[in-house]
Image 1 (tube, helix red, strand yellow):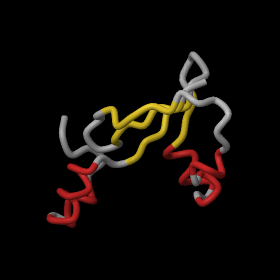
Image 2 (cartoon, rainbow, N blue to C red):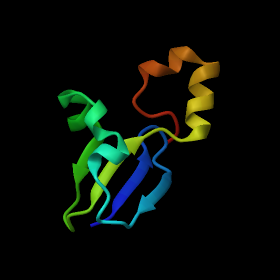
Image 3 (spheres, rainbow, N blue to C red):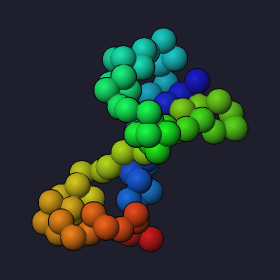
Image 4 (tube, rainbow, N blue to C red):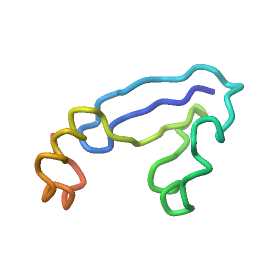
Length: 76
């Protein structure tokens, strides 16, 4: 099982963790509430974990343009 991180705004692949022995506490998933987990974390058909996060470019864009928080996707 791998853990794949993608930006939830632009879809860019941020990275992958191939280590299957890593705990969810180490990744900080325990800090998310139930609705955040449902929104951000899912399993694909091969059993890998897909995590929606934010890339540096989108984070910087949102800091400069706070009204963009209204949109689900920034770049299509």
